[in-house]
Length: 327
Image (cartoon, rainbow, N blue to C red; front, side, top):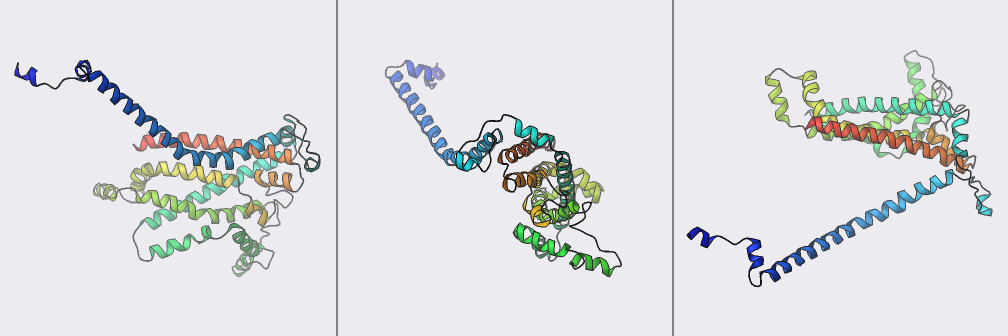
């Protein structure tokens, strides 16, 4: 009896009490009002980012898509006429005699650059993850290629690879090897560009992977060492599984960066010799700004965007799986 008398009345009972209905309705209105204000505040915070994305990403992409379906030439600047041609620009790009070679060059350039950059960047990240003197100094020196403007780095490398007077060929001569036509031989030019791209990309990969390694608890390595798991076994059992989500992000960002590299190729070879180092990015640039075939150039750019989105989607799916496995 006593317990029943002192029990706090439920909300339903309070609502049924005289004046309780009005109080409950007032509380409900205040909750609705607070929720609405929070939603409006959320949208106001999101609005600047949405406007930025719309202005600097959505509008150019939509404009590029519409251009690819029209015959857009230099005459369009005077007449304002760009006739609708449907998929003709895409057909021209895919059926051109250079499309197969450009596709192969883009695939080789992207895969070899990404693989070499990742392996070297991972090795350096593991190396710098250990504690030793001058670690910070050496790590800062490795970052130098990342700090230089790409056009300057490319100009320096072009000078180093030029003819028989370049530094690289002089070094080869000192060890008794013949000069290599780094930028003039169609069989070598693409790999010369890859060397420079790898040199530029290593610091980015190393920094991201090094940050991931720093997040792995040291306790795990100490516990594993008690069971005899050190060195390669510790890397395979602890480092790699916990680093896998970071690896997927590095590969995705590395792919997006590599597949659209333009300035390094233009500064070193210009896509030559004889198109030997042409990629989708350089070909789209040349179609639009050298041959003034804006519609065809836009079509090739859109093909590049679609390829990038497909690979990014696959890698994001792999990232979710890696996160699940890492717990």
